[in-house]
Image 1 (spheres, one colour):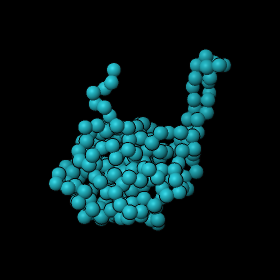
Image 2 (cartoon, one colour):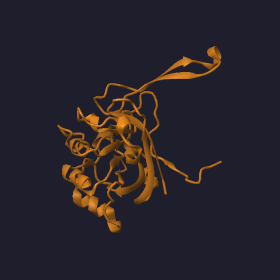
Image 3 (tube, rainbow, N blue to C red):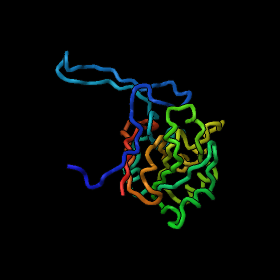
Image 4 (tube, rainbow, N blue to C red):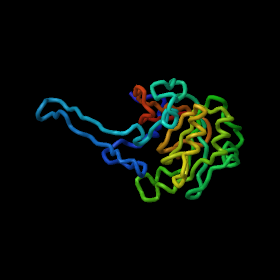
Amino acid sequence: MRSPLNPIDLTQPVRPDMPRYPGDNLSVRFTPVATHEVDGYGATGVLLGTHSGTHLDAPRHFLAQGRTVDQVNLSRVCGRARVLDVRSEPETEITPSRLEQACGGTGQPAPGELVLLWTGWDKHFGTPFMTRFPFLGMEAAHLLVDWGVSLVGTDTLSVDSFRAKRFVVHDVLLGADRLIVENLCHLDRLEPGTVNCCLLPLPFSGLDGSPVRAIAWR
């Protein structure tokens, strides 16, 4: 029976040797440990990083004493989300004025809401063009913190510019205990505005992040 929610999957499929952030040497691998032909059932070992594919950054990712992924309250990753259309030219900084413009006539996100930045860059995932994504500027990151948002998601490899020498936007958001989700996809299937969503990480004990299964519905 089909769910009346009719959710839209915002998750990049996890597959061996899937695209990863340049410099991340840990590729996804699937290793059969039991087969139907030999054992009568199938089981597979999976090797992946905490930041493989569509994933959540917990504060511990950049803060030695920050909250770990298993300490993230589920209310922080499930609830009302605001999809903001910030589609831009390659390597364009998303500024506070761009965020305010994207809010349109609906006003700024309410405290506790999640914000999903729709750049359209998921279409370049796995291509040489994927590193030229629009990025969140530091002033815009401070504005999102001031708005009180719970989480910032994006359909790019990172909230920071690929050319940045320091991950200053990660520092701003995670330092304010705002969560980050990267490598979302299919935000084009959601109209800009308010949706419901769940971005569920695995509760890896003491770790800095986790792949997520991300869904949204109206």
